[in-house]
Image 1 (cartoon, rainbow, N blue to C red):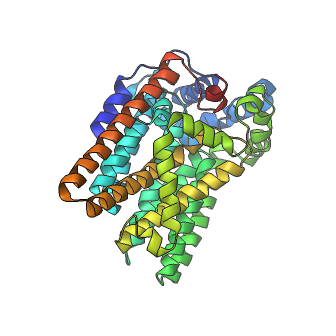
Image 2: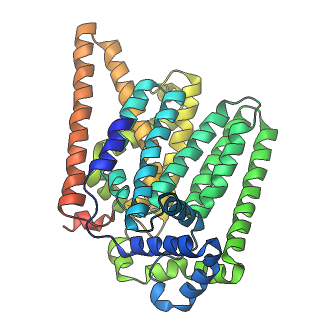
Length: 398
């Protein structure tokens, strides 16, 4: 499944027309490639002094720009094709991370099914073809979830908790969204440790998380050459975007904004995933439908709280776009796969062996058929029709 996902991301047709934001990020990375990391203060100054640029992303997300610039240095090429390839590579890395997380903390069958969902996800495939931050953001978010799950199982060694802090520190420099991801993972791990009597470790973790935030802010201020330009950027970060016609027409809406968008693009996995999340946080006698193993059930509950917590923040936030949910794609697919496995297990226990084999085979075939429809949706909307964004109105107002 990992190989199939990588082949899809490498072989599917590219984008014929890139969005303005993609060109802006490629331009920032090209400046860093040409003039060095010390050019960030000048870019920020130019941005703040040019009102015409305020409708575009600012160069403040330096963690993402460093990755793009690194790819340019690695290939000795500076263009949109390279920056788009970064998205494809990080999308592929998310497949590897999901395989590791699902196999280690859940079950090989959960790994297989969740990888199928992610490999053919129209949402993730669309992101992998553009110079958007979401593929990188999603990969780091999945790494944070994996580090937190690994730290939950460790009895004394702080290795995975330290990894969580290090990954979180860099993730904060990539995009503001990662502050929510980092907070959910750190708080979720601390609560899990407190429940197991590790109060001192939980306090140390929360103190380390606070220190990580301070360290990331310090790095950002130093990179920007001071706090004044940063203050000006953040003061208008959301206001300038909300003033645009595109924001008002495509990136605002109530809770149904996400329900409609996910229902059009990837309905079955997200429906199964959210049902699995709700089951996992119910009292234990209900949650054990997903797994009778205590360690696995704790991992399922942590993942569910993460998915539902981020979803709640996204629903309440004024600005909406299906791209912003990229940090829960893989975890939601993991919960969907856990529910599929629970259904298959229930069928196998309640039917005679011969009938159970037929029923489980039909279930597996249904997943393959669903995957075919997912690929068809991607090709229809993003290749044939060339829809340029994951904003729900692009699909509901067609």
